[in-house]
Image (cartoon, rainbow, N blue to C red; front, top):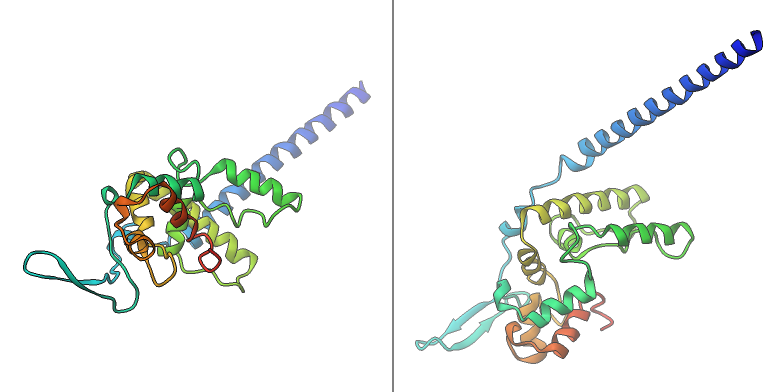
Length: 229
């Protein structure tokens, strides 16, 4: 009976240890998320900043018949166009190149993220630094400050957390078409051509709405590595 009681007591002690361990684990998790919210999430600006950004466009001078005479560029060539003024070929090309699951993902590609984490663990790539969806890239190029080559590991993690949160929030508050419109009107195509309309005019002397499959494919490859392509 004494041996039985000792075994029973040991089981109770073990159960208590496991129970307290689980309890402290959840407390730690809750505390960590609370800290992340206070230090990282709460100070973030509203995603409405995307549409409120005051970006200077080119000045276009027309004659009395409405024909374009001159286009004045103060710094860079910029002309904003809405989603309907962008070729479907360009839309398909940029999605295929930058974010294949764009139309289905919630701003974050979970499959891509877990695959990158796995590859990182086995030393195959740089963890999840390259797992940015198209929506995350838009956030990074507008709301979040540009990253520095000297940033610490925590800075990288903090930046990724900001990207994840804002990308998810933007996807829930704006249509996929609107996000693509903003993205294609915020990125550089090099050669002093910012945004898709000016890139199309610069490289192919035609409007973005008229791009064919080959032209759109070529343009879509440039933002990934502009100095190379």
